[in-house]
Amino acid sequence: MATYDVAAASHAAAAPGTGVLSTMIARYRMWVAARRTAAALRELSPSLLADIGIEPGDIDGYADSLARRTL
Image 1 (cartoon, helix red, strand yellow):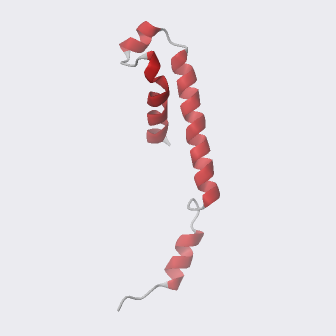
Image 2: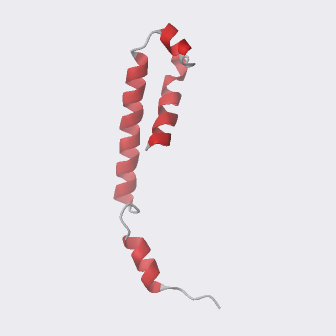
Image 3: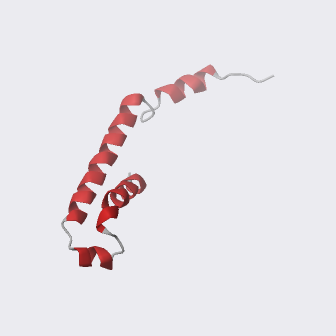
């Protein structure tokens, strides 16, 4: 028969960084990072983008994937 550890469950629920608000804050920070990255990439010329392997139409997707990896 399995037992349920009430103390461990209450500690896990109260652990910082696991709540809805912290999830929303993390997602907002990720969105801000992606927008900043996209803005910086849009300032580059098409030839500079080609040098780093990005096409102008792929900037938003690339910025989103970078933001997800770094935060």
